Image (cartoon, rainbow, N blue to C red; front, top):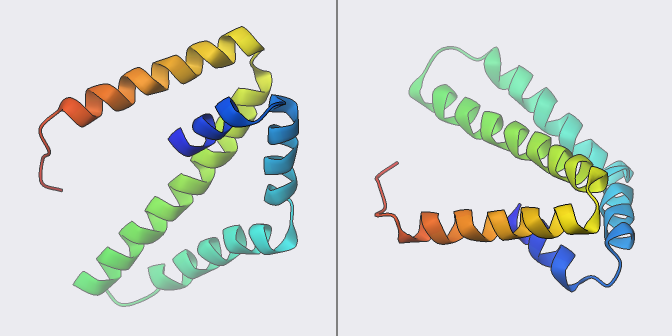
Length: 107
């Protein structure tokens, strides 16, 4: 998300940027990656219970959430006007600064 917002700051036309992201999203290879993750997660779900299955399922869930987040960020950004987008970028900068100042916790 920070990457997308950073690109927004350097791209001359926000609408051009959004259109390019959307066109990527609707390219067959990009769309195939969404489908592949879904299909692979479904197949992995059918595996016998194990530690490895749990780890793989967590990775697939993370990928699925990442794809949903990307779609949501683009849709939300499209709905914003320039001043709102600028405010959103400033909020993300603050969140990023706050998170980098926090002590790291083990995952």
